[in-house]
Image (cartoon, rainbow, N blue to C red; front, side, top):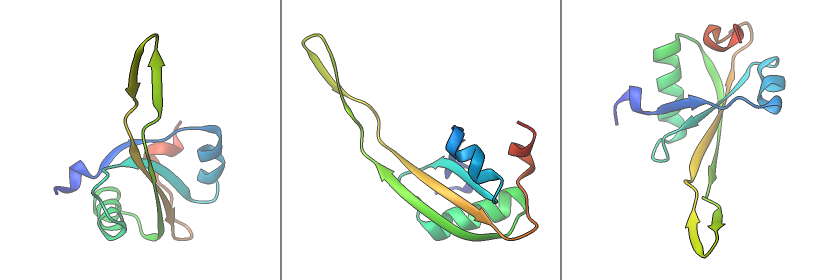
Length: 94
């Protein structure tokens, strides 16, 4: 897997904004990516030092519209904790 395919998008909620003050940034990542690949990707692309990576897998939810039954897409969420003194400039401007 190429490094540019690992990170999908940042996950921006009220809870993730509170985590950014402590150096924890939340991203949606590829479901096949493991913690070491996620850490390597962030250190190479954003030029920061990562101290911890936590991941969570989410299954898709069942949805109904009338008689039709479907499912939303599942995703993998990664919480990236940076070392002291490091910031991620791409999200600090928001």
